[in-house]
Image (cartoon, rainbow, N blue to C red; front, top):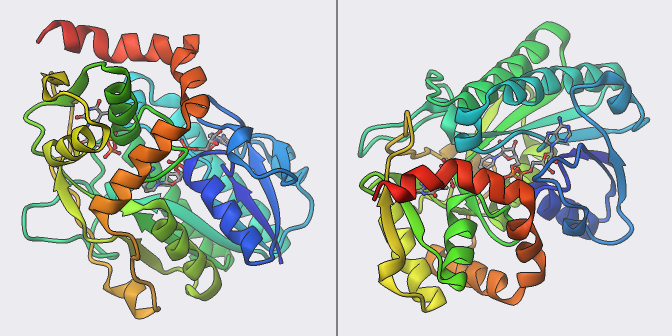
Length: 329
Ligand code: NAD
Ligand code: TYD
């Protein structure tokens, strides 16, 4: 099967590409190579086309494919607060353009979405696939818009598409703007760890290998028009994650700095995963061990992240995001 992986040069997409290669599939990657896209994430020899999912001519340049798995997105909540336009363009319009290509080719389609489309949820409850969408940030609103385009394409045009909604994912090769790689690399450099608000927000952590296994299962066995939550039910407060990172890196507790909270910050995510488990999926990675192994990966792979953190683009972003927050504490 020739499988198009969009956003395959990013964090989760690149792990998914490796997984498909092990399964003996023929893989082609379409990636715009934004700040988050990195060809070095991909194994040698993978066919990589530089292009934009929101441009039909770029998508058509891929030629024939039997299936498409759409990881391509603008993905960072804090960046979406600074500038939402690109999120709508890629996450909504890009999804629509890909759906049209899948329809023309009669290809299977999987949309990789997020638990954030449900908005936050009170303690004790878990979001189910048919819950209403109540996104809080420009990022999650754009992802919700993409999901709705998928459901409309199934119903109106009969596209063979399914949606996965994964929870906060961690592992090697994650761009160091998200909390886990940012805090690990800052800790390794003795730099402050800027914890938003009271740090008691809860995220449901999922190892990238388990996330990719869930997406692959949905690609092969998911039903058209169906949505599948993916999560390991490993719920932890950000303070707990921060303590584990300090322990794993041997850094000083004094590096923690409570800073101004994120606007519109979701308090807690939690997913009901019984539907995917009924297909045969279960998580394999323990959170404590997985976070420690990921911290070790960053310790051993400075050559991967140091050039990113030293680049002008990253430093400008970091200044914009954190200078005021850190100075105020
Ligand atoms: P990432 O930011 O690491 O990678 C995104 C990739 O998409 C990059 O390679 C980038 O160059 C590419 N891209 C961006 N705009 C593009 C465009 N217009 N055309 C083609 N390529 C483009 O993201 P990630 O963390 O690997 O997330 C992948 C997918 O998984 C996203 O759809 C995201 O919403 C979803 N997701 C992520 C998480 C998480 O915790 N990281 C959790 C649940 C769902
Ligand atoms: P993040 O990794 O940005 O993922 P998401 O917002 O998609 O869940 O953030 C995870 C949690 O960590 C979220 O509650 C915000 C918090 N956070 C901080 O406290 N400090 C930071 O510097 C970052 C990037 C995030």
